[in-house]
Image 1 (cartoon, helix red, strand yellow):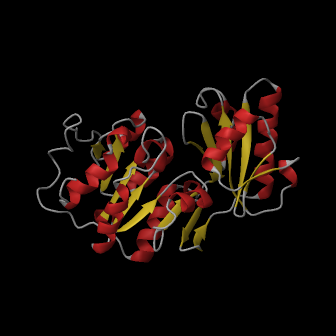
Image 2 (image 1 turned 180 degrees about the vertical axis):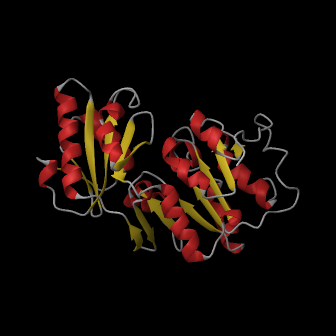
Image 3 (image 1 turned 30 degrees about the horizontal axis):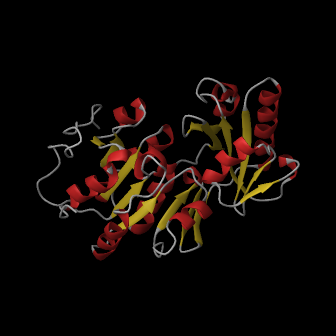
Length: 291
């Protein structure tokens, strides 16, 4: 894999290195925040007719996000039939309401992460934990500012008195830090890195999951089950939780607004999410008429 992605022609188009003929694509996988979603966190209106065209061509579209499955299903309500959702950073994969695979987190580990979060808060960090289960997500921090951030990503969210007493099958623990998470909360989670994934999924979010749980691992299982090759797969991402996913596709695109490590890892560069980069790139690859 090239260490330097090909460059875009500013905001005018995709890389000139893309092939002149349509590409044999069978699977399109895209991150949501900072990738598919626009600057206001909305799905661009042009996606809906594009999804119809992808279905007509036999191309499967799959959102892959740190977001909760219920949140993704709500965002794509009315058009989700047959769509595969890679939710909770790859720990939960669902199609038509049926679980295709999951990678549950041991409850004892989840309790240790909660205890670490409480300690950080007691020491002055402005941080809170979201315990992500299959039935719902759970929080014990109840101030309006924190709940507003959590509700952006978790449609099913319950407030409880004690996270360590919750009875569910857990997928991950997500920590939100009002400060830059790479400088504050993430370093405090270093002891977990010896046995688990500690993934910075945004400027303020860090997720703790099983070592085997990544978006990339979920994507590779999906490719195997569907008989789709990396050469037939297009992936878009912008942050560190997308790195392994990029490795699973020959058509890997970092957004122009992506984290520097993501840009270095991808084969190609797509326009920014605020410039409809995902839609424009798919259109270019499949030679769709410009809208």
